[in-house]
Image (cartoon, rainbow, N blue to C red; front, side):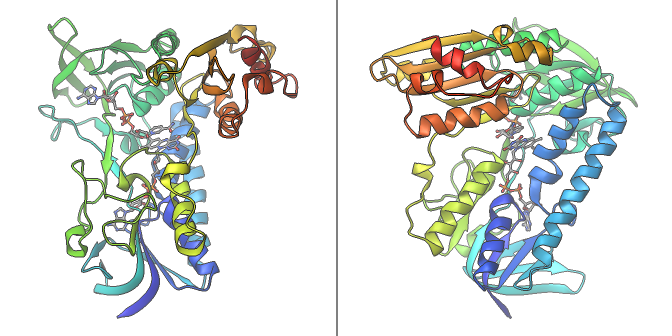
Length: 445
Ligand SMILES: Cc1cc2nc3c(=O)[nH]c(=O)nc-3n(C[C@H](O)[C@H](O)[C@H](O)COP(=O)(O)OP(=O)(O)OC[C@H]3O[C@@H](n4cnc5c(N)ncnc54)[C@H](O)[C@@H]3O)c2cc1C
Ligand SMILES: NC(=O)c1ccc[n+]([C@@H]2O[C@H](COP(=O)([O-])OP(=O)(O)OC[C@H]3O[C@@H](n4cnc5c(N)ncnc54)[C@H](O)[C@@H]3O)[C@@H](O)[C@H]2O)c1
């Protein structure tokens, strides 16, 4: 049986970066990825990059041209990811589905039959899969998609129902609407983005409604069925309890994603999972077997590529470093939802800060007051900051504006460094930029 210092299961962000690190240290690594279409993981092939490519191209290209462009970008990145590891003499890239035989042995099957390999360390980075809601007719109805599949269809649906108003629901509704598709979002909740303040949720809703998106809040989709070859009838209970129907060309399921442990046989290695099926880890990302680590979506919690990357840093530090980095000291974690304009947040919302017992002060700035927003011809949105009234320290910030995905990283650094609102209010920014609006926002307290 071939022996490795480290076996990576899944070509996710954390594992591929860790594989290169192990190899750099002269260790022998096996990277096992189940599909030749997935080198580089979800982000590059089915997640962040293809969706952001389609989002950026909306309004610039036709839908089918944008799909072609997206294919071009993802195939370049996939190839680069494969070659980077495959050309490394210390790394074997194995294309096969892996499963545990015991605490150190992994089995996989390829055209030559079943093989087993041994690893001193093992790393599970198998990502997540869409949750398929329990809706009558969902398994056998045509034109029902998850995010990965709908991004492969060249034909643009004229009408689209999206079930779920979370990250994917928001990004895909804004994107399809801007290609000219009539979009209806069905959401369980009584409003969008439950973890955000109500004023911000309302802003987001109004922006999307102006783009033509319709929302059915507090709705429950009961069944889907094909009416002819090209249409789907969606039957749902609306917020008033009335049964309604909507006929659309396609339905996108965006009701969350769960840890992907399917077929891994974790039990053979004694690796425990939690009630939601995610792999249980400690703050160093060790599983119930100390030499087996889990990184990225498969361990539950926040599902972002940059979390998987940070998981790599924690594991690297635990194995090769001073063991100081943990999941407890990552600092404030920002996020961006790529609707148009982008919505980004870091730190606490107003409501969260109040619930934590802070005496707070709140500052707001309308995007229409920003010179660069006029240049960009995108004057929609709002900026909001929350600070501790006693210490003037920044507690949180919400940016609903063009380029907020860039700006939020600056505010994150300010929060992590413990800066005060006056530090940003008096910071020198280049002009004319969206970032310089942070002078005014933080000067508005
Ligand atoms: C549509 C969409 C848009 C997104 N947009 C963003 C965004 O803008 N920003 C952001 O930060 N995050 C975004 N995300 C989330 C992000 O894609 C994930 O959090 C991230 O890719 C998770 O990476 P990972 O390291 O956990 O593993 P993944 O990248 O999911 O990699 C897991 C790999 O393991 C392989 N695998 C699974 N089982 C096995 C097995 N048994 N044997 C061998 N290989 C196996 C899979 O084929 C896959 O390649 C988006 C997700 C989606 C779906
Ligand atoms: N920009 C980004 O960083 C980005 C973009 C896309 C996806 N992602 C990641 O992908 C993950 C999955 O995204 P997602 O949008 O599928 O999940 P999500 O958890 O963000 O949202 C799911 C939504 O579906 C609703 N819902 C669940 N079941 C429903 C039903 N039967 N009917 C109506 N509504 C229902 C929930 O109330 C929730 O609002 C996210 O957690 C996120 O981490 C990130």
